[in-house]
Image (cartoon, rainbow, N blue to C red; front, side):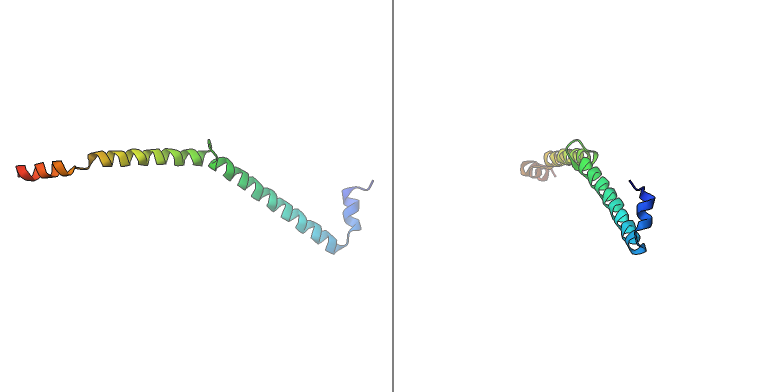
Amino acid sequence: MASPSQLRSALSSEEQEVLLELRSIASTIERVTTILDYAVRLTSPGGAFYEAQRRAAHALDRVHDLWETSQPTPELNSEAMETD
């Protein structure tokens, strides 16, 4: 069986360039796949980004609830005007 270097030397220079381009494309695909896997892990339940969004949404709900309960009611507004 021929070694990889023997096989490469049997290729024309154009074929070697194509082989280098294919290796470069394969490397790029591998990097993109790694990045996408990481993004899926971050945004899946239990992932850091997902959990941060969940906590932020919960905090906003609490702020909204506090804001709702701290708003003066029409009855309180009329009482305040009567005492002025």
